[in-house]
Amino acid sequence: MIRLSDYDYKLPKELIAKYPVEPRDACRLMVLDRKNKSIKHRMFRDIIEYTEEEDLLVLNDTKVIPARLIGKKETGAKIEIFLLRPFSDNEWEVLIKNIKRLKAGQKVIIGEGFYAELIEKYDEGKAKVRLYGEDINSLIKKYGHIPLPPYIEREDEEKDKELYQTVFAKKEGAVASPTAGLHFTEELLKKLEEKGVKKAFCTLHVGLGTFRPIQTEDITKHRMHEEFYQIPEETINLIQETKRKGKRVIAVGTTVVRTLETYAKTGKKEGFSNIFIYPPYRFEIVDALVTNFHLPKSTLILLVSAFAGREFILKAYEEAVQKKYRFFSYGDAMLIL
Image 1 (cartoon, rainbow, N blue to C red):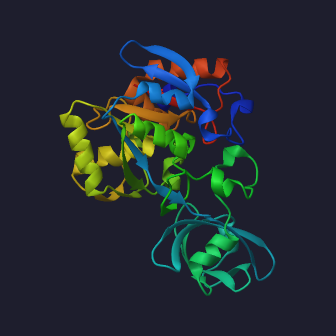
Image 2: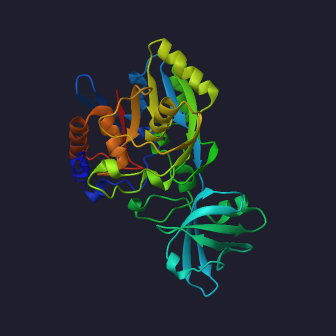
């Protein structure tokens, strides 16, 4: 049995980053070499030194939507609606805090000329709602809040609309940021390009499933929630070309790993992925990984452990704690070679 408790570590709360460092590429970078089990401490902008001409950097171009809608029942009771994914423009799958307070057909007033009506309840606080208003997309942008992860323990601010978005974010649909990509600046991407490093995109709309805690000690019993992904033909061609030349496919983030490995397993360029990667796992496409520091006992720490080995990862995390690295979404980064 693969035990969840084997993927735990102690993290002092003060190391959880509440804000990112600015500029984006000024955060720290821990470089792990899987061959010789070495650990180096650099700055993120030094990542360029670890790339070679004709390497391929694959980035997730999903864009975070302001998914938190804070409204009130007609009685005045506060209700928070968290958008998960659209069924159509005005019908959404959502999570509702205090869902017990709502009955089917009841309205939640979000803003002027903008309200939600509960259609039906599912399990785990999920529901289907219909949104009413002139231009639903514009109203979501006007009244919605950026969905910062709960461990950041602060309300979202105006600047989070930019900070919690990658500089290459393009396709709206994520309810959490693909955070490994947050460290790249336009300037750093340009320098990588000048060095001859190729760049390609895929899309995985990060859902809450990525962050849902594993509830079972036997991790093989955990089931991932589905997330929509899409890989352009151009990206697939670049991956094949990179492999032919014996160069590396460098995934920026666990979402890219899951997208590419889903394609490797299914041959499908588009669909819904629920791939759960944990040790032991044979990676078919990804050769190197840029990632953040992840929560203890999470699906993400299992994925990086599958890539670099559990003991090596836990040793690196222990060192990161000792050296006071900043953890999680707005924290520092790791490059696994």
